Length: 350
Image (cartoon, rainbow, N blue to C red; front, top):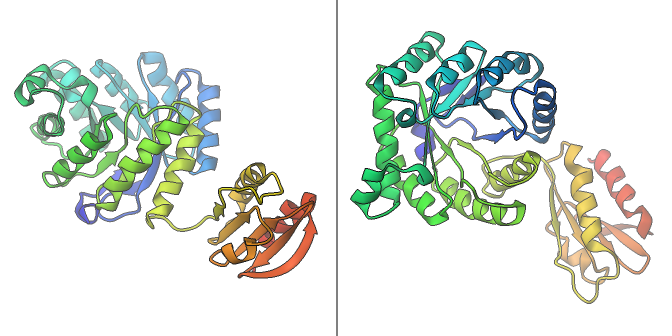
């Protein structure tokens, strides 16, 4: 496992790398200088399970807002910087727990040194971020296009810029919207660097397409033992990113806890609104701290048998349903009481 041997990096009160648990990140999508809205969104993400949050810092107002935001949230805050090195310095001075920069686009060695000087004084980690969409022209020409090899060479070049300033408190992030290219790049990079890797499929798309691309790409990368923090990038509510990231980690056996809901795909035997019921169950169990599997089945004929692998389940019939525990029917209830009967069992789980 590559992640067992990466450098340990402290971000606020969180620790990544060196075999520590993989942490889930997200990013706010409201103006950072709007402190009230930004805090509101971060608190919502915290409740969903976000463990590190990133905010964009395009101007000095946003940098100064970090100080007020930090007072009201409970997870480490990463400042996202593009082009203006002064914003990176201002973000650190206002309490950023980590900064994300591309050392190649903040204006030369002198500016990189100025940023690193402040980071070193405050022991703030730098996330070196390289995106396939902004790969340098010389590397595109060298490799005959945008390639995994070019992305990795660019990232290692930027890491060297920081190391040449006598600083190695770093995290690396390389991203591409091309899933297979992204996987290949992470495989190449993991063999070449000891730094923790933040992984994600950038510009992956809407909730549907983004989830599929992220599940495939992150699933493979993480299964290969690569990755210390993750973000599922979606065009939509950032809270959806957290739900998806948690499910990816749990599916891979990389995270325990939380109720897993399984449901049948429906067929002609289904006599209840299973799609709505399964969604209601998923939402209903979100606040119940059990590590069990719940099955939602649409057929009272095969439901008990199909639910045997689950700890508890419900199966619908015509106007009524069955409550099933460890494969045995324990109760028959009216359809409109199925959800409440299930919740009652879960709240009194033994």
